[in-house]
Every structure is written in C-alpha cells, then in structure tokens.
Length: 289
Length: 291
Image (cartoon, rainbow over the protein chains, first blue to last red):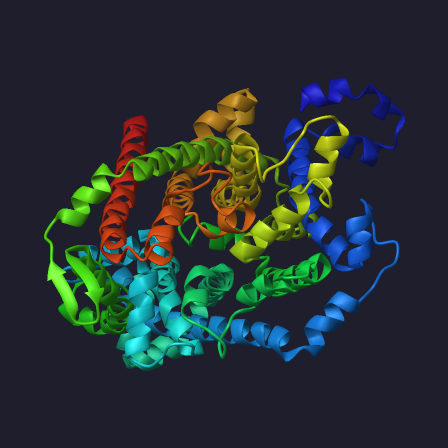
C-alpha cells in the first residue's frame, strides 16, 4: 500500500476521499479488472453479433451493430422448434434439481450426523461418479433408457444428470449440515419432535442458504451439460443447446441466429446468479470454510 | 464432530443409493460386459477375454491422445490455479455493490452451456468475423485456429482459462473470506510483508478450497469434450483430439463398441488414479507444513 501511495503523487491534489481510493489501486486490482475485461469481451462480441444482420456480420468488422435488428430473436421466439428447446431445457433442469435435492437432503443428514457400516465407502463411491467421464456412459445410457422406455423424455435427462448432481448435492449439503451443532437435534428430540417434523420445521430453515446454494449448483451443472442431454433425446425433449447445431445448414452459417440463441442460453444462468449472489462465496467453498 | 453410531442411518441413504446405482452401476456393468465381448449383432456375441484391453493398450493413437491430454491438463492447472489465486486476492471485500457485481461477472462463464462456450470462441476467434482473429490479423499474425495446430491448441487452452479460472477464483475468495480480521491486524503489528501475509496467513487458509479446486479442475479438464468439439472438432489433424474425443469417435464414429468399452474402463481408472495421487500429494504437503 505504501508503494502505491508513493507511485501516485498526482493524486495529492485531489480531494481526500478520492485520493485514498486511488492510492489503493494495487497491482492485484489491475489484474482483476483486466481479467474481467477478458471475460466480458467474447460475451460482448456474441451479444453484439446477435443484433446484427448476417450481411453486416459478413461484410466486415463493426464494434457495435450499425443497423440493429431484432430479427434473430424474432425467429427464435416465433419458431416452436426453437423456443421449445428452451422449455425442454428448463423443464429437465428443474426436474433434476428437485430430484437431486429430495434424495440428497436425508442422505447428507445421515452422513453429517451418524457413523454406520460402510459410511466412508459409500461417500467415496458417490464422489467417484463425479470423476467418471460422461463419454464413458453415452452408449450404455442410450441403451438403458431405450430399454426402460424413457428415451426422449425429460425425466431421462433429469435422471442421467443425477449421476453427477446427486453426489455433488450430498457433498455440499453435508458441509452445511455439519456446521449446525448437534445439540439442536438433541434438544428437538427431547422436546418431542418426530424426525420428519424436526427436519422440516427446525433443521431445513437453519440450512436454507445451503439448500439454495445446492439448488444453484444442480441447476448450473445440469444446464451446462450437453453430451448426455443430446444423446438421450431426439425430438420431444431436445435441449436448446442441441437445437443450436441446426444453424449450420446447406446455405451456410446463420451467424446472427446462432449468436442470439447463445445469448438466450446465458440469460437464465445470469438471473440465477443474481439471486444467489450473496451466498456465492460460501457456496463455492461448499459450506466447508 | 462426534458422530453417533447408528446403522439405521442407512434408511436415509437408500434413495441416493438407488438413484445413483440406477444411473451409474447398471451402465458401468454394461460397459464391463461389452469390454470382454465381440458383438456382431443382437444376440450374436462372443466372449473374447482381454483382447480388447490388449488392443487398447497397444493403440498408438490412444497413447498420443493420452500424452496430449496430460500436457493439456497440466497446462490448465499451471495457469488457472495461480491466476485464480491472484484474482481472488484482488477481489473487493465486504458486502458492497462492487463485490456483488464482481462476483456475478466472474461467475457468468460458469453458467454458459459448454457448447455455447465453444460457439462464443468460434465467433470470437474467426479471422473474418471475430474480434480476436481480426485483431491478430491487423497486427500481422496469421492467426487461424482451423488449420494451424499450435493456434488451435492455444485457443482451446485460452478458452478453458476463460471458462474455468473463475471457479478457482471464487473458491479461493471463499477461503479468504473465512480469515478473521484479527489475523491481518496481528500481521500489521508484526510488520509482515505482503508476501509473508500471503504465505503464512492466506495460503494456509486457502488449503482446503485449493484441494477442491485442483481436483475439480483436473477431473474436468481431463474429461473435456464439448468445447473443443464445437470449436475445432478435434482438429486440425489430431492436435486437439483429447481422450473423450477419441473415445466418442471410436464408439459412435467407428462403432467399435468392444474396444470403446475397454477404453472407457481404462480411462475411468486413469482419472481415479490421478485424482487419488493429487489428493494424497496435496494433503500430505499440507500436513507437513502444520508441524
């Protein structure tokens, strides 16, 4: 800090409050700002392109759309084969989040509170599923879901994504639950609470931040996954990310449409982050800080 | 925390057990099944023993893909972990609007579907319509990720840094948030340098989250598929064909199911082995430091 103050003699003339803040601009802040610019540039470029006509995109480089058009978005919102992709994606992602949370909550409670035969082995086994390359499961998944008649349904994708989301949910929730002292459970049982009633009315409200963070992670990993989602669907449950490959057609690439579809896949994520922004820090430590 | 011994806790585990078993154990058994059989059609299968495994272990293209994959994953770790730490150190503290905005902007790439990440970089990197490609051309570098192997490889690497460094940064930020202000005050009184504060206060406190970060980044980069598939399709040549890419080519492209299944098992074991090694090294060094 003293180094920065020496290096900023020009700031001396400025009012005291500005001077203090400018003196604090350290190398680390510069790295951070540069990195955020690096993050935003490609995204800006796609947003920029989504408002351009294809003629403008192909005719040369323009830093902002000179003839802004909403045509690309209009195509997506009026063509059912486009917008149903979004509905499908949101449908199976929500389904997956609900399933993951429902089964992970009791399991995480068991792991955080009890010792039982094989507890460590089961926990490790759950985590190994997060380490399995999805490409390994493509073919067997395809055959399994075809055999049980779930192929091309939303529930198939939701179940397949449980492969990596349930272990993750158990992991995060266990971290949050271990932060709640055991005495609370014991007090509740002494007061005559049954387990379900205690869990629903006392325990869950105490870890609601953890539940929110877990839901966020399940949403995130299910929303971004494409390999399994594409393999397990053909028409009725096709995710938007798979629909996007359609823009490569015989008449060349419809860049504007592709960019617009891309922008619309970022929006749900951005919305979700905004809601959990105050819990992100704790959430990314998986409740274990 | 002292836990109570109670085997009835298994009842709480059963739902998770069933659902993960359904989507993990059954498919995995199918893969094992395929890996020891030759399949000519429905009902026409022959037991071939370890033949497929021998074929996989002798496959030169697989060796190339494995070497490429290891170099790539190590490069990813070597760039993303230090960069993530530096970014986390530069994050504003407290609950201000500035903090929220930084967090949201940093987290944004993590919520973009993998193939859209590929699309973004495709649009960004192309020489004719992309800002990056056009900039390189303007300053005289003949940048073209579709036919220059080195450019393709670097673009895939930069794309991964763009996509995932935020995860490392957010994990480290979470670790830093847990340091009580009293630690910093004590360091100030002792006249500790910035480096000393980092080395003896911040780094030890980040150890837990760094283990998670290294493991997650290693596993995910080792399994990367969608982003390079969209951006380069594994080319030019085989320069960006990583393990998952090669596996999918084998299973779907050539329909070589037996070999692909054997490959899958070897692949899974490699990931497990590396994760275990990393985990052991990191926890060991940390233990040593405490003493």
